[in-house]
Length: 106
Image (cartoon, rainbow, N blue to C red; front, side, top):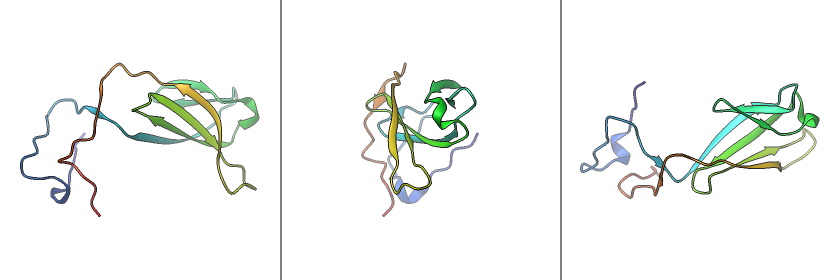
């Protein structure tokens, strides 16, 4: 797998390790369909969200800093999503602060 980074967001002093990249504080989002057991699969792990959501899509967000995963659902007749489950999501790796030499393009 190749990793491409824009020169516009990196300064000249940045060195990227060729091995495994470290985890940094942030969030990872997933859209998943709830299966017939009322579960979703995220990163090869099953999470029970409830049989009332079978065949519906939910939004799961892993917060690396808090080491939690929140699952949200928005019904077709609703304007906003509601939190339906919250799980502890312990990580075996250290979660680092975002490096100041890497930034978002404006």
